[in-house]
Length: 429
Ligand code: GDP
Ligand code: IMO
Ligand code: MG
Image 1 (cartoon, rainbow, N blue to C red):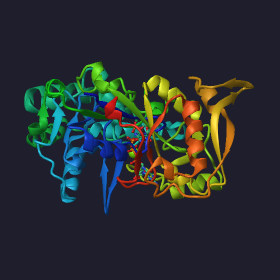
Image 2: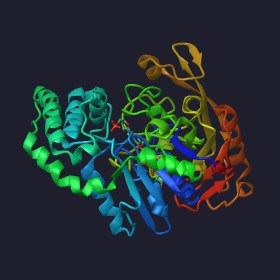
Image 3: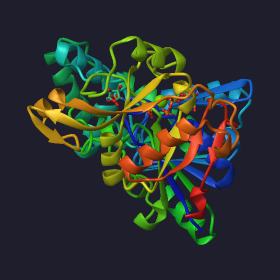
Image 4: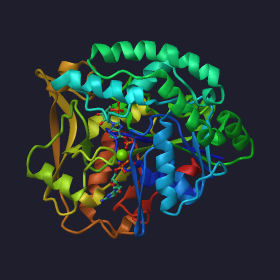
């Protein structure tokens, strides 16, 4: 039995949802282990398009979906997403979805703090999704968070809200933003409780049972290694660890459960929000990638910044993320480009680097060093096997494999579920 953990190898939106949906046919359970509804995963299945934020992408395949303890759960957003997907014909019940009883809740006050702080940062804003992700994780580490299990204990809720609001209302008042009323929040949570609690359980126990029964688990990462709170382009990151190791701590499964780590990387590179992006293109090629790749944020609708493939960055993600194989997506977006650049390292204040240094000034000053490869005149779209790809596309992928020091084991050449070429089944280890 081998499990698979899918993580992003760039700055998010690499197509993790599409790949997880495709792989889910081979899995028994699909588990989210970090992030929250800042994630936006688009799945195209024939003439249906599903947009998921908090729900594990395996639900679309009818697989058991699990939201692990490492996820921050906005109960209202969750219920709205369940309603939206039910309206598209999916079955989502406590038989198909389980939520860790020890997962942290995102409350309306977290979104308010997130947005007020971003406004106060002005030009230095992180460009968060404004959904309260950072403040909720801060509360978890500060030991004042309200968790799913607290919804069953009205007194615990009431006491915790006192402590939580003492902290957040002080901050909100300081930022000149409206403060929150305890009784209103308490009433809201008590009204949500009977809708959320039927999904709650000790997820670690179910995962242990699944392991003993030889079931296959697919762990679905959100965001990406370069948005990891430790390993990413800090402080322009999200507030959770996005590397594969988090699959274990964020679900209550042991580290041996992580299995094969599949890193998802676009054939070029995008980023939403602020922060360093050495290979960013501000020219017609950048705009072309954005238009062809339909590069608009699933969650916020913001246009994504676009640039060339950064092999130095993905190599770093391979190392710190524990990536065993790469799923390369959106190769079709490069069809017809006369030349392609791959970044192999950076020039920073006269020095050459083959990794992105941690300092903010160094990251901002990093100038890409490019290797130029010929493009292809044929098309990758429609290819059903490796042998049907244009020779130059194969050369491009082979060069990337060398530079990032990991094999490309899956290729995606279109948004639809079926536009996928498998070279090596990650469940085979
Ligand atoms: P995620 O956050 O990593 O799941 O990625 P998103 O769903 O936010 O963004 C990826 C976008 O690219 C979605 O709109 C997908 O439908 C689309 N997509 C995924 N794979 C491919 C591909 O191989 N080719 C093209 N053209 N689009 C793709
Ligand atoms: P998926 O799972 C791309 C970015 C935000 C911002 C930074 C911090 O779809 O790949 P946050 O709201 O998390 O505090 O914002 O992280 N960000 C993402 N960018 N894809 C995502 O998720 C993202 N989730 C957060 O744009 O720069
Ligand atoms: Mg996304």
